Amino acid sequence: MNRAEATRLARICLPRILRHESGRGIVVVGGDDCDDASAGSSPTISEGDVEFKSLCRLWAGMGHVYEVSIDVPGRRRRRFIVKRVTPPPRKRRDAGDQRKATSYAVEANFYEHLAPALIYDRGLTMPVPYHVEKNDDDDDDRVTICMSVLDGSPARRNLRDDDDGVQSVLSWLATLHASTWSSCVDLDDMIRRGLIQPVGSYWHLDTRPNEHASMSNRGWEGRLKLAARAIHERLRRDGMQCCVHGDAKDANMLFLDHDDDDEGGGGVGKVGMYDFQYCGRAPPSVDLAYFFCVAVGDTSDDYRGYTRRYHEQLVRKLENDMGRGGDHRARPPTLDELEDSVALALCDFQRFLCGWGRWGSDISSVVIRVLDRLDGGNALESEDAYRLAMMREYG
Image 1 (spheres, rainbow, N blue to C red):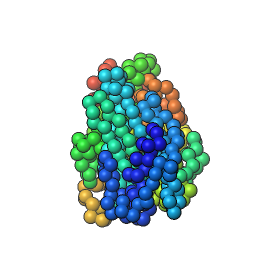
Image 2 (image 1 turned 30 degrees about the vertical axis):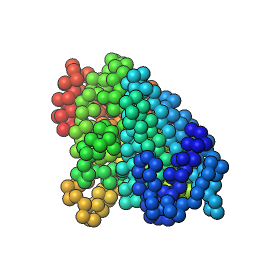
Image 3 (image 1 turned 180 degrees about the vertical axis):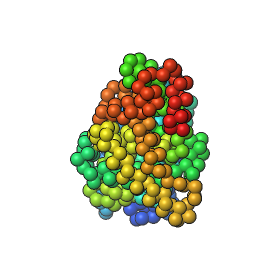
Image 4 (image 1 turned 60 degrees about the horizontal axis):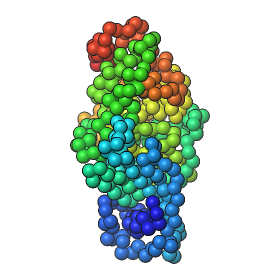
């Protein structure tokens, strides 16, 4: 990105920054259109008023994240973030490249069409989207997302020692999940429109055949390899479906200096989350299992306490929605249902780790308990046998 491009984006975003700060909300549009109501009072800015710097490269070198700052005449300096995605040409992509390119397109759609309601109606703290551009050429699907800055401190690697932090994350996740509960919103329509992934998370089995194939055929890992398809299918038909974050790790969280950040959006707890590339349809247990394993750093036998605390939050939020006239079918899950789903999601994540590389806390004891329930401690003869056992034990 050069200064001229940074200035072009600053001229588009500044009216929306001012509109958001005034408490009038924000409507994201593509191209160079601006909101007329706010543009009329927006100061004129030149290239000399704009500075920018690169903050980091995106995964696999698919672009950069920049911070743009504007010296607004007569006002304080404003900042915003530009996430510029430049995937390789389609004809040169492998499966991993395509998965990442698709994820960035989904993230752009999420910010453009779903984030404003989650921020302003549900109070979720996340970057406020100011502008989204998507290039739809046959061999060029660049994406540009301009959003607010979240000021705060990165999450500590081991959140187990930060009980308030864990509670804030559980509240944030429960709000997202309750706001997108499948009996209250049309997840299938969101998928058709490309707003969310068909399956939430970056590690689900359909996108990780190589990791699955590389798993050991011995011991409990070999049993998990045989059971992987049954676990994946059970999570797909889980009665608790919603939009999950899909990458709820500590690196995608910031703990804010105060609950209502001037530049960020929302106000649920003190945590803000970003990186919505893999948000999609899944049971809430997918976010919980990943968070417990890679961010909390907890032992495998202690996750139930956090699951109970999350369950209390989710039930309260779903019941509040029903009390406000929401869909009466939004029956909160029982704690037993949620605990079973979390155990299966931990198995699903462990399947990915076995083929990709160990990360986070040791959850093997949970996996072995689930496998023992399915096969009695000895490998069954086939994937189909595990499907039958899954139907018998987990429905």
